[in-house]
Length: 507
Image 1 (tube, rainbow, N blue to C red):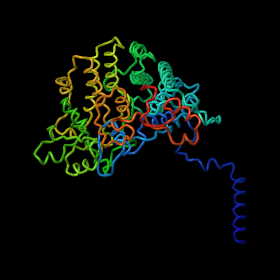
Image 2: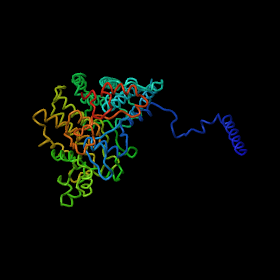
Image 3: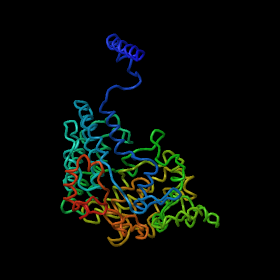
Image 4: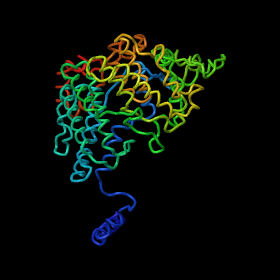
């Protein structure tokens, strides 16, 4: 005990001397001269953009995101729920950007790029809230971001009001970017160009509005889209997109993950067969030939060598057939190139396909549906021009191929029903291993393309003949925000938080 007392006293004396004698140069000694010590609008903007644009999860989560919309199956490491129509809880973690958004605007006040940072704030909020409400339905919106003032239990806004708020924030973002100056801290290919951000904002507005087609009359969707097209501030070049370039600092989620899971990811027959039907050479950029077919004498350049799996097949059977090399795995470029292709979350290609649908529906008067369709598909095909031809298995996509793509099943149909199916299929192909969530949302909206669903293998216990319709609310809400959660559940779903319940958008 005596030794302990002496030791303690020594610490106390040292602490006292340190506190009194080193006060003047403490900050200097403990400051790293190679790092910033203050936040700024530019630093916060980088963090905010990455939070909404970068895939949040590991390689397995990335594959799972593409399994729900039936792009892929997987073998050798156990059955994954999304392949068999099971999903769980979502998260409100995306709302963590809200304090940073407020601080970014605060730090930008009075600066040359103030309006651009305000536009970014509105865009980021709208993008984040859009995905949350599309996942779950009613969500906290108008009362969020007030933790600093002691408000930790926000009420849930009705989904209709959330969408109205999102559309209003995007309109405000458009107005801010219209008068904004170039801003620092932008990790996207836009490099702080307010003109490109304005175009991305309006492309997002069009995408949000098309996702609201089931409520077109209630939310005045046709006139809103027409107004945006009239203004003319949309993506205008085939290569335009908003998202992130993969790089050494931000590699593709599947890069260098050649393990028992990612290297065994199998393309679905649903995707493979539709690519074959369209005579679409993206098949060879997406897939590897099936080993068994090569042993039978098929060439890697022949589409007959490419075989997808029925992703509703019983897992043990799929695993056994995979062990015999009967299926096509995902193209090796995803595992071996850190920048196999950008993460295009908004693009000219998708924008034009959406406008093709809007034209068919009579919502816009400019152009023709066929022109929009062909412009969108050509842009999507042109993305493959930047992929090394070594990964095309002898079937590279070049400009001549693109110009002659629209024959057979790919030629624009004569009737509107088939035209819409063509547009929806091209949007589906476009988002392969890019944005599986959008493809799930689109299937939920259109019920096309028809997904393979087997009630015998489905893990969607309350609706074995269909995909789930929504994610559950975060489990923490039952502990920390129960009253508001229960009010939202009572209002929407008869008090039950269940994956097959219809949110307002789908009723």
